[in-house]
Amino acid sequence: MTDRAGTPPEPDPPAAEDATPGVPEEPHTRHWLRWTALGISVVVLIAAGVGWWFYRKLDGNITTDTTAADELRRYEKERPTAGATAARNILLIGSDTRTGEGNRKYGKDKGTQRSDTTILLHLSAEKSSATAVSLPRDLMVTIPSCRKTDGTRTREQFAQFNWAFEFGGTACTIRTVEKLTGIRVDNHMVIDFRGFKKMVDAVDGVEVCLKEPVDDPDAKLKLPAGRQTLHGEQALGFVRARKSIGNGSDTERMDRQQQFLGALVNKVQSDGVLLNPTKLYPVLDAATKAITTDPGLDSLKDLYDLARAMRAIPTEKVQFLTVPRRPYSYNANRDELVQPAASQLFRQLREDRPVLVTPHTEEDGKPDDAEAPTPSATPTFTGRNAAEGVCS
View 1 (spheres, rainbow, N blue to C red):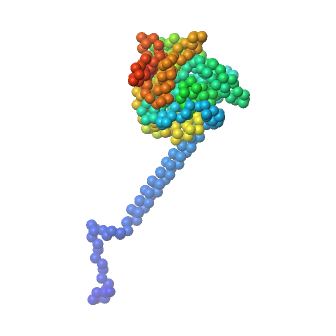
View 2 (view 1 turned 90 degrees about the vertical axis):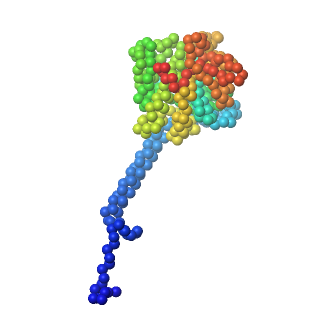
View 3 (view 1 turned 120 degrees about the vertical axis):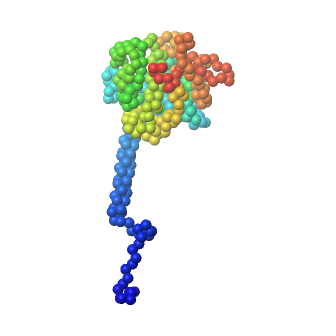
């Protein structure tokens, strides 16, 4: 259509402030949006790829012990029944093996290994508390007939506890613990000297306090008196030293190990490690390389779920104690349980009922005994919690 002069009319220019919806954007705006979207996509894909690579790497670090699981299945009928609650019992075993990278310096490898440290960790069903019970390596116990690595079997015998690990490895140790306590072990972890050192280094050391200087060639440890931070090699010497610190007893060494582990837990929780990826990755890398575990804990997800449960527990509710014990009647260099205190402790854990842990004092006289509670009272044992630290 034209105007009267025959010239097509020009459309009225739209007002700048009345842009019509649906009008195409300027070319440079479209280009900017495209590049922004592309950049975000690339970043997301890279992050996802790196995250997946880290996950696969950490997951692949873990060593799975299927041998123990297979052996335990043979004895399922004689094992304690699983608890009705969601409580969890994990056996932590520190191996004194000299085989493997970095372990030969601690002595000659004789082809055997014993459990240098054994701790039964009980996580309450509500994940409101954790109780770690040290089992003395020299405790006299009944060790069941166990299958050895060469396929032969040992006889059932009454011997010191850490022989179980030498006789039949992890499965034999678990069965011995279950017979002793009546508590079913749900999972287990084994860590050697090298793994322990790497864990301590991953959190940049743990602080300790020494009243006197230490010089212990057997433990590879030489330290001045006072407050100081111990890293891998020194930390291992500190928890292994026996004759050069205190009265030289294994009981005191276990107490020192509990103090150190409490300080380690406290540092991990208070130092923001669990919430900071740059701090968390080295810890996870060290932890996953350090342990051999059962199929129920052999993935990064399993360990993360366990760490998340522990993170939710206040440090004052993470308790450490040694099973009530005293020198063995027939050999003062061995230990025996103090009854009925030991059975009472095992029953409380078995039934997922609370126990109280209070610091040992010089006046106690019986550092590993339980107080005699009234029938309605919560049983109390000497020990410590993770909030106290080594320098408390």
